[in-house]
Image (cartoon, rainbow, N blue to C red; front, side, top):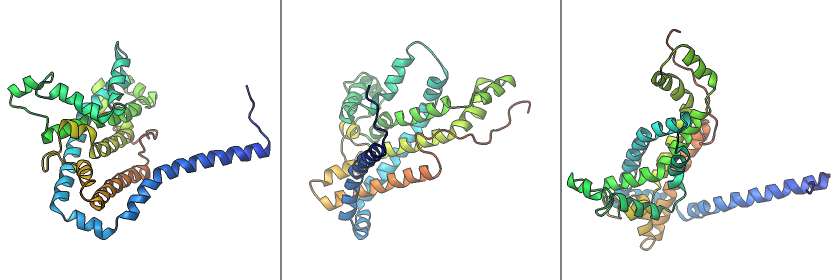
Length: 282
């Protein structure tokens, strides 16, 4: 095994190499954003926001992404708690399944949703019998956003649950607190920073969802055309408008991430222990 050069010159070259590589990555991420910012003026942003089509797409994006986040919280927190606190046969397979939407192509995810909930899908016929249609509807947009965004919530919440100080749980068990009481009074308050970070990332991912949405829900104005889909449409019609809407989404995501960082709620930040509610007998 080669021993690294520990001479002053070797140390300096090593630090310089690390800084250069970090600078390259920083430029790789920053230059596209800078390119958009230089193309768009504040007057152009205001002009685009005043158009009915953009307002419609923006409102649909906000509405569906918030609905998707609520659904993700209701379904994702129980899953995160299960994966963090239980060992059972098939747990590894379930963990892979929960992470799968983050790594498969979004268009593949949209096609898979069609095969599950479309007219000829596994559940499509049964849903149609109840008068429920999901593809090419606003509800389909929400479903696609949930599918693509919920892993961010589950992953962050699970990490928060697993990082809890065992002494708090031992104290709750000593006081004979039940599992549900411990969940509401101990686990959730302690893991709250991680959960909030997961909610923020989940909402941002849902807001920016494109591939699964256009494949499963289509691109219909007023029904399924969210802002990312509107950007795609405008690329061939109005490049300045596409740049304006793209920058708007980037600004929204930047504000969210900056606020989370300022509050110490980064997705990979360790959970901080808030003041706990009193346990029974205290």
